[in-house]
Amino acid sequence: MFSWFFSEPLPVGSAAPDFTLPDQDGSLVTLSALRGQSVVLIFYPADETRICRKQLCEFRDAKSQHRGVLVYGVNPGNAESHSRFRTNQNLQFPLLIDKGQKVATIYRANGWMVRRTVYLIGMNGIIQFARRGTPSPHDVYSVAGIPQE
Image (cartoon, rainbow, N blue to C red):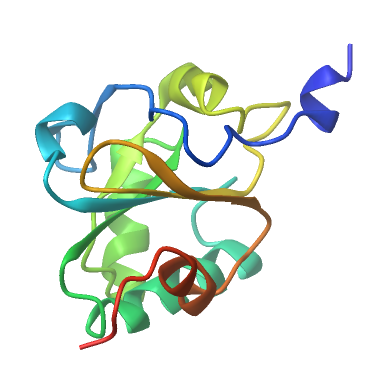
């Protein structure tokens, strides 16, 4: 019953499962179409909550130092909530709508609410970083050897 609570993120070194999700504007994002670029997926519980706001704003602020990395927030919120959150926080990266936590499930970030989990997927589609909680952008990028500009 509580197996989701004790599950670990997908292991580093494994292939990132492919998915297609809409963003806040209705544009579809397919992970496999992003091959050749590093991708950060931030699974977070809700828009405009204190911890989520802090976490996503840290990645917003670090993005200028890591221009070659694509960042996506992921949660089951709707397009209107995501758009408002992006505008209010000046987030320059898309927020993906994971209705029913289908992608969160395959990335082991699901539960009664989304489990805060961050992944860095390398240019080859392999997971280079996976951690629960709120790792700093520096931790995410440095473990994978992504230099600051």
